Structures are given as C-alpha cells and as structure tokens.
Image (cartoon, rainbow, N blue to C red; front, side, top):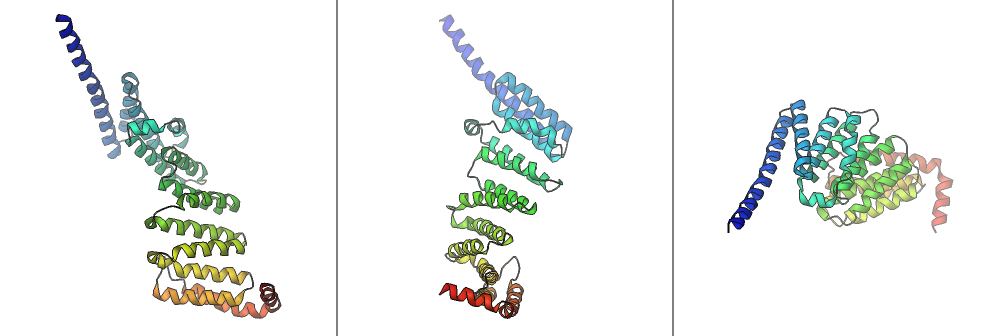
Length: 301
C-alpha cells in the first residue's frame, strides 16, 4: 500500500510539473510579445531568446520555433536581413505535424513573410525578400491565398526588370492556383489574368493577349459583381485588334467598352478617354495601313 501511495504521488508531481514548465514558457513568451508590441526591441529579443533556451530544456519545440520566427521578424523589420537568414532557413524546415501541434506557428511564419514583403519595398533590389516570403508561405500552405500574392509580386518584380519570360512563368503559377477559387475571390483571378495579358502586350504577342483577355471576359461575364471589369476587358480587346490591323473589330470593341463604361463605372478609373484615343488612332491607321488591313480581311475569309 505504501508503494502504491508513493507511485500515485510521483504521478501527481509529474502531471503538475509539465504544465508549470509550459506556463513559465507561456509567461516569458507573453512578456516578450508585450515588449515587442511596445517597440522595446532589445527586451523582446532577449525574451524570445530566453524562451528558446528554456524550450530546449523542457523539450517544447513549438515555443522555440515561434520564438525563432519572431526574432527573425524583428531583425527583418529592422532591415537586418543577413542576421535573420539562419533563423529563416530553420523556419523552412518546419513540418505540417508541428503546425498541427501549434497552429499559431503558421501565423508567426506568415507574419515573417509579411515582414519580408514590407522590406522588399524599401530595398534597391526586392528579389531576395520576395522569394523568402514565397518560400515561407509555401511551407505554411501551398494553397494559401497569400501564395498567389507572392507569385503576383514576383511577376511584377520580374516585369519591372524586363524579364517578361520569368514574369509570365510566375503569374501563371498564381493563376493555376486560382482556377478553382470561389466566386468571392475571382477578383484575384481577374487581376492576375489581366497582368498576364499585359505581359503578352508588352512582348507584342497580341494573339496570346487577345486569347487571355477573351478567356477572362468569358469568366467575368458570368458574375455581375465583376461588371466593373467588363469595359476594361473590351478596351484591351480593342487594342489587341488594332495592333493586328483589324480596325473594324477594334472599333467595335472600343465602342462597346464606352457603352459599358457608362453603365458599369470602374472604381480604378474611367477608361473612356483611352477608348476615345484608340478610336482616333484607328481612324488614322486605317488610312496608313489600308493595304495591310485589306490583306488581313482577305486572309480571314
């Protein structure tokens, strides 16, 4: 009986000890979080470091992982990208099992990705930060909406550097993820397919630009809440036809865009002036490229 009592007492002590360690880690983590919230950089860094050290003794890897992600975020926010690199690389090794154990870990990694994105706007070359943000988001969830955001940001970066092939490759990856998105998220698909059409236009690939725009228009016309995009898409088709010497088709698209613009205003700006300009240019181009336009018409028939 005495042995049984001792065994029960040991079990109770064991059960009480583990939560106490966890509570201590919880308190230290909360104190570090509070310091970070109040802009106390050094105190927050020291607090998270204490959590990491205590986690190693208590075998609490989730607390350590969260603290490392937060230290990395603090460093990135200060522009100390190189100092954050080792912690960033460790974050890439986290697993779905660890995320299931503590879902807040996913939030911390996504916050770190946001910090890299924010820093990308302040640096002369945003490439490293943008790719770091993408890598972190892919670790958290390859199908998370923020992954599409990263692909879009990288595509825009590549386009700004004149690398249209890379821009096309990355925006297509984003579009592929959005193909089965719910209607409420279709505006992202509109944005990304519009960017893809723009890439084709900058590459003077007017056939692909028209094809992409028509596919997008077919999709957008199914949903009245996307009516704001209809005038712009018809205007884009007007440009595509004009560049291919199809001036009659171009005029029809510009006229339709003007009509729709009166009925469905675009919150991003009125495209009517652009359509009017296109119609005026077509009037000149019809005379200038008369023979070429006739050849195109004959070829179609």
